[in-house]
Image 1 (tube, helix red, strand yellow):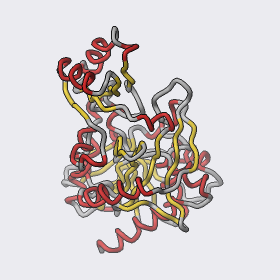
Image 2 (cartoon, one colour):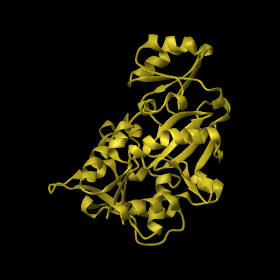
Image 3 (cartoon, helix red, strand yellow):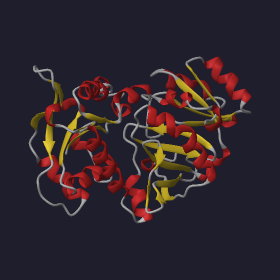
Image 4 (cartoon, helix red, strand yellow):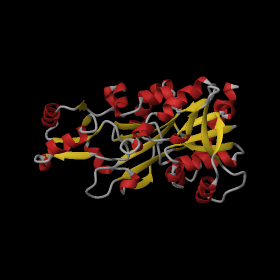
Length: 332
């Protein structure tokens, strides 16, 4: 099959990205792999969706590093949806929020057209539009998510702050990677208004109850077609423990990754949210779980699958690409 991966910018991809590992696994299994940035997408005069894409060279690679180096060295070539079996949207719109706002919606918009042209688009672009910001979490039952207020009104934040005994999390409605996430308590009384105003300059603010279990970090769990991703009885999950004095559990913010296991709380969350994710066509998702609450659902380019594979000494990429192969086969 032919898989075209859509990323933010090809030259900014890294060997440690989950996308790189998935693409390398697809290549090793004999599939044709293309990479294109969202700025490389094109609507052609014959009505087809296309892209000025780089094709992975037809040779073996010893590592993700050499794979990516060879890919980036390739010249772009024009290809189109007539030749694609899969268009995999792995770009993060939030990464383009400030400097490339035109790029935020490009992947899903072109993906919708490609889907109409018979291409299997992952994740389903209609589902991605629904899940395009953190508001998506509010579609799920209250039992699995923290108490939340989403607003641009300072009085709303103040009221929630008092209700939560002067300890809340503040973050932007649109964003990723732990950017502009703050723990607000009495020590920040003088700066609280300024923080809210800074977040609201770019949109809505999320005020969320603080969960004491967050001190122990969070769990990033991968779901595939609405079910926890397993291989050889091991679950694709990592425990992320933040640095001392840091509230964010993002790996690139200095958090330490450790092996995680399923427990009853996580099983309950999966059973609750999995069916809606599957209904929305979210093939691969990353759930961020603190204690017994779901904090975020990552649907565009969830990372951490390489860490999970290394900790459990199994190749989760193999399971994911096998599932994609079955999906393509079932559409023929």
